[in-house]
Image (cartoon, rainbow, N blue to C red; front, side):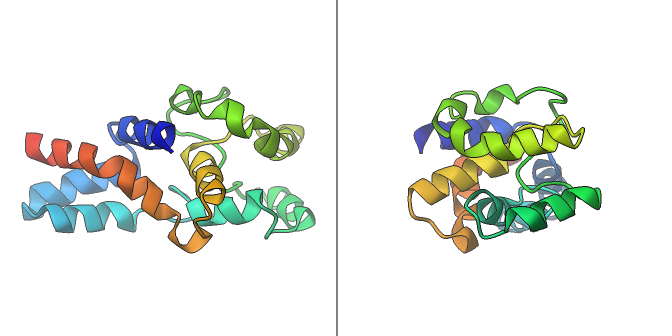
Length: 158
């Protein structure tokens, strides 16, 4: 859990959709609560799809449905990174050894489809949530817990 939270704190320093939304909302409103709401509003299927990743990794999505998603050219929730292309994101390297066995079949399937993407923050968050018996519907709370202090620091510096 601590490794995940530390990685999320570092990830919050990147100009991801959530951090950019946080900055814009804070500059416009001067209200940290509203800024956090704006940041959280960016999470979903394209950015931070923790719930969908947890359902995919732990078998709620049947693999034939997953392969159909890939054939339609859709993204796999929990794979790919805007900041690191074609190789694993080093922010999550400490967590990789604990979950590679769980994530490798999906990564291999993606590579077979020509998609050279690797597990991202959502995939590792989903794995830690599952290990801690946190249901998919509330697993995003781990992202919030890991990023909130960094987001506070960012707003204080604006």
